[in-house]
Amino acid sequence: MSKRHADLTIKSQFERQFTLPDSVKTENINA
Image 1 (cartoon, rainbow, N blue to C red):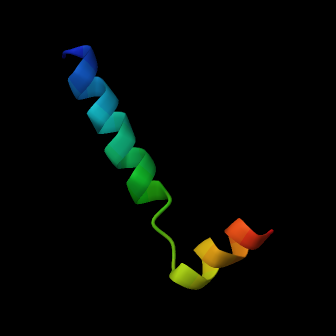
Image 2: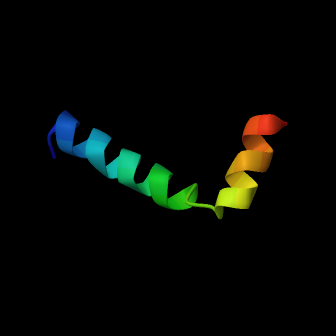
C-alpha cells in the first residue's frame, strides 16, 4: 500500500469516527 493511500484511509476512518451531530460539534467548538 502506498503511503498516500494509507494516509487517505486513515483520514476517512478519522472523519467517520468524528462524524457527530451538529449540536455536539458546536458544543465541542465552544468548549
